[in-house]
Length: 99
Image (cartoon, rainbow, N blue to C red):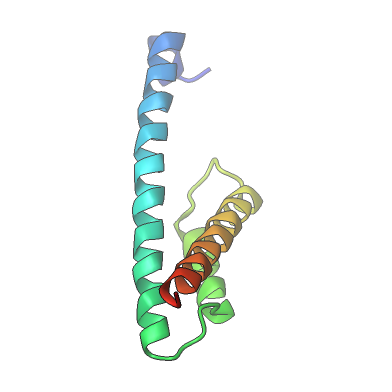
């Protein structure tokens, strides 16, 4: 048990986790909004929505940021879901734009 953990109650720990969760949800939605904008720019330029090279670059970059204790494979799995959902949102937006 670390000194940090010894000094905090379970409720304080959970409160900190809840606050971080709220921030993560906000930031994830902000990220998807940027992905939507990027998708619109891609469509206006005639570029493909799916960019595997960009996805690989993102995964490499975020792994370089990870100082742990989050396991690299867990971080990669989280980001793969984020990237997949971002592409789906872009594709849904493209279908709606064609109407």
